[in-house]
Amino acid sequence: MKQFKTETKKLLDLMVNSIYTNKDIFLRELISNASDAIDKLYYRSLTDKNIKVKHKDLEIFISTDKEKRTLTISDNGCGMTKEELEDNLGTICKSGSELFKEENEKKKNIDIIGQFGVGFYSAFMVSDEVKVESKTIDSDEAYTWISNGMNGYTIEKSNKKENGTTITLKLKEDSEEENYSHYLEEYEIKHLIKKYSDYITYPIKMLCTHTHYNDKKEKEEHSEIEVLNSLIPIWKKNKNKIKEEEYDNFYMEKFSDYTKPDDIIHINAEGVVTYDGILFIPGSNPYTYYTKEFEKGLQLYSNGVLIMDKCSDLLPDYFSFVKGVIDSPDLKLNISRETLQQSKVLRLIAKNVENKIKKELENLKDNNRSKYEKIYNNFGVQLKYGIYNNFGLDKDKLQDLLLFYSSTEKKMVTLKEYVSRMKEDQEQIYYATGESIDKIDMLPQVEMFKEKNYEVLYLTDVVDEFTMQSIVEYENKKIINVSSNEAKISDENKEEIEKINTDNKEMLDLMKNEIEQVSDVKFTNRLKNHPVCLTNEGAISTGMEKTLNALSKEKINAKLVLEINENHPIAKKLQELYKEDKDKLKQYSKVLYAQARLIEGLTIENPTEISSIICNIIAK
Image (cartoon, rainbow, N blue to C red; front, side):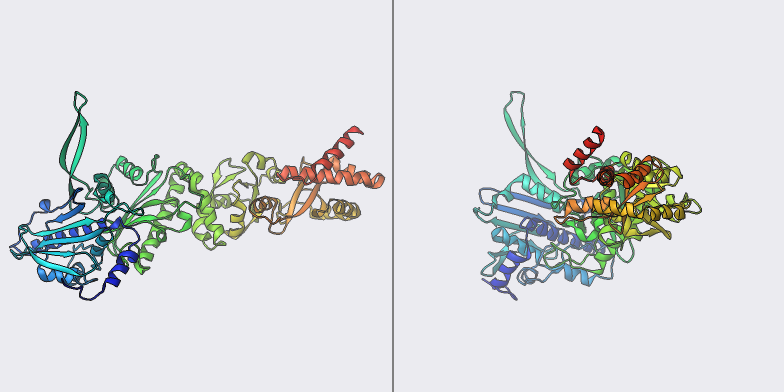
């Protein structure tokens, strides 16, 4: 029995129990090592005429024995000498693949997966004993390496005839916490290979059993060798030769979606960093999308081997709805190959992916508006959150992707399209908020803007106004809510309305004191048919008040102003009441304020009192 050269049982225990967090990946690691060994043999055959190898004959084979509780992975690669068995398996963290790569670093087309020589030891997570039989292509001698992962290892001569390596795992007994037996099941092996090793470039074969029933309804079984992996990933194929149906089927199978994607972005990038990938914009919202359960991220591969199922670092939050795969040989992996080291390569890929998505969305918006609107209906809110969440930091990236319903165009438009149609004397971009297009269209505040043929953007999502306030202005045009006292119409007669308010100041102050919830009561000439409306002073509008109060336990109030249409008969009635019956004026004030709140979709704090006042007025 030989001891491990550089590490102790304590270190091996640490690696097995701490470095790897998912036991399933042991099969990925052993298959990756087998692929490396075949790669090295095939590469050597290209330069060494004494080694005659046909690519079609190279393969990895898996077999199980339930009675003996063994799982075997074999390859017909380069194999290892006795010294290499000791160096590569007896010395933790020494990698033959990495040495081979370093020796040939100036040569191209070397695709070696293994980097650290640690993956082999993941076998001890599921095994009581690991046996490695190997024969190098350069010798007639073969050797067997055996270890239980605790007390070192033994190396003896073997009678193996063919070059390559065979690894046999004697699986641990099942416990209450772990079921090791399922690694002997055909369906589980197929699942793990499909998940982690589907794109290994050599066939992974297994003798599979199939059950069927004959004409007499008798159960029959037969076995045949199957190839379990797809070999060539779709993202490495020529995109001009891939049919839409192939993309759709890949997406629906890979991401368990029943609907086809709305858009596909196929990437083949070379340069400072090399990577391939396919990005998909789903055709519908995942039901978990706006829940805590949803995880953003792209599937990340290194040379066709799945490294992370959801790499969140590859997507900004505002593009979190995008699904897809990225495969790069340039990634810097950590020692367990389960997670990534933060690196310049990863940041470059993420930045390029973000630009690809943004460019594709812009192209759809400009050249295929119907498709873009469908995508926007599903995920536009996320783009708005992208602006609001970062306090406008990303507005330059995203603001031209936003769409809003236009009062004049009767369709969804961009801010750029709005500005292109602005009147010469128009200084502001106008918007209004509400629960629906129809309700916004009937708001008193919108009435005058429509009358003057000013375009107003109708905002119906709860995040819309927060987004607009984060953008602040677009092309030097300030973005203003029509309910704000900052909203201006060029031909307003300010001097006339100011005089009316001055002349009626005492009456208006009395009304304000009676209502209490408003900061001011005043006459306006911005209304046409409606008697009253609410406007706001400051940053918080009535729409924002509703949203914030729905999210917060603390009550938040907008600084409201009750505006009365000076051209409406109610204005004259109020002036008469001020002279003749101030108590009744107070009652009218409360009713008008309640009416204005109802128009805005706000609740009334004292509905019983308001109902009684209205009944008394009607009765008289």
